[in-house]
Length: 319
Image: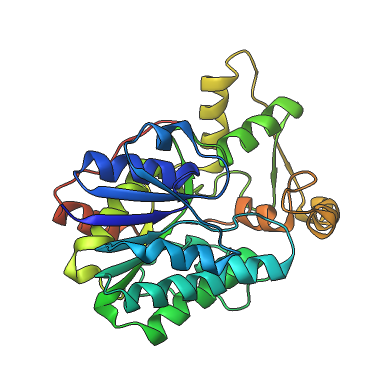
């Protein structure tokens, strides 16, 4: 039985990953900072306390042996101070990767984001065709890019892999789904901005597909040194997404859609981005605005290749 350390196991994606790998027969140790999701507490995984801002707590994790480390813990927000992102999403990644190499971990699996490609229009490009967008302004993808570049330049290819999920949802989602539902409740219209008028791809990635891809990235030889995009195969537009959410969570609400010019919302988005802490004052932030006005349509062929290699089907989830 292989031993896995999963950082950030108390959170949304991490708790799903801990549950998944326990069910797959691995011995799982998961880190939490403060609170932990009920899913993780019931998973059967061992619990360790750790804080990305306290490197001594990361050092202490390696008083036991792990075969694999899956690093999920991160500061994930549209807004916040750059220094906090730099420490949590870059310096801590470097420290954990170096610890993993020092303690003979077979592979360090890093949960990154598809936002490393940038937020603009795409049309089915594969990972081999995509490059990092080093012009990104938001601190979240900025330091994800820096972390991936560090791994590529420092670790042997066979000792690391990167998983880049798109918009993660499903199984107790505490992030994008509640935010979208709150918008639907507060607005009489589903409002789109810019040229796509809601027909751009909203790149959904079910959390179960994230977990299965993490599995492949962890054990497959061909995953060494590679990044893989996690994206559900069905093509869902932003308009489809809001309609499906409304049907499930707000069936009494009549959906009316409205498209406004992009310049009309840019000012409020700038205000939200500039004056928010780690939680946005209101939506959209500039980061969210770039996301909902772009056609984020990538190839998921590598993900499907990984799933086939570990004898898993793509999970067909619903909102």
